[in-house]
Image 1: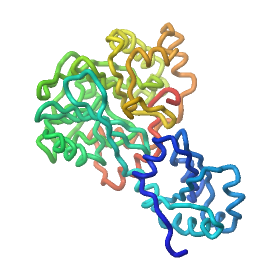
Image 2 (image 1 turned 30 degrees about the horizontal axis):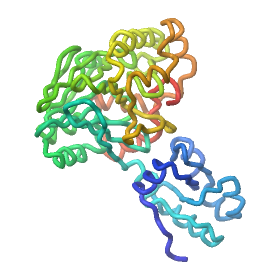
Image 3 (image 1 turned 135 degrees about the vertical axis):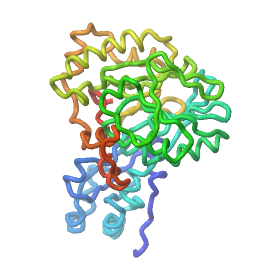
Image 4 (image 1 turned 90 degrees about the vertical axis):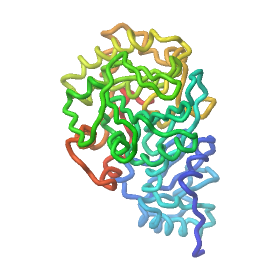
Length: 381
């Protein structure tokens, strides 16, 4: 009984993405569990602190969780290994998550999108938070949109795998839920850091050279064109990027299952005006695009269903059909957006200051600040 089988974060993610049931026994303290835990359409979780678990009857703990696959989880995978041993003594077929929640937070996977674009577009996903980034590859050049600092090296390596080199690292807006990788890539590679021109007024103070991009301006990547479309509402600088007039990288302006929340820049007092601005952006800048335009957002929700290609994208026509809020008149839209917003992203003020370049934090501290759901949508996605 000294050896406990382990499941890697990659294997657990593939298990969940395949829709296979899994029971996650999270042995952290309740306050840690409530901040963030593993979720998904096929996931059942039970939070039983390790000391409580070792004094409990495993049959009672798992009575309401009949999944054949059982995985124990803690912060680093060490305490949960002992918890797994306790369950195995009761003949529970259980595996321990290698590296725990820290390893889960370090997981990044990517999918090549099925699109009409000339460029190859890859969607990178961070399962622990639902954050999405994109690599646009054309010939021997590539651009990364909304890169996460934690995975900066991965974008460079994957671009190289596709025979290209990063020429641009671009943000859609000043993020409030993770540390942007634009500065790190601008400093350590030959990629040019690019931010929306409208975001500069918020006080961007980078210690590296950077360029701005305004509404209607373009970036040329190989034989492909990326057009900036200013879509304020979530933030004043929110900018979508239209790749080869086929794929719209919407950032946090529009998701496949929700619209953006409007309170992260101007607060609750400024949210009604920002919500009205979001309405105009969606109606005049996004919904006027061709119905087949592929919407590729900056986040996906815990229970979002992937598309046929495994990505979290959808044609504009499907998004419009799915979201009744997009057909409301402005006053009702604003009321609906403001009605039931989730809690703001954890540590959002510190993350915004970091992404403005107003403060620097070490990588380990950044990972701590990023933990938890992104909560950038007005409702659950």
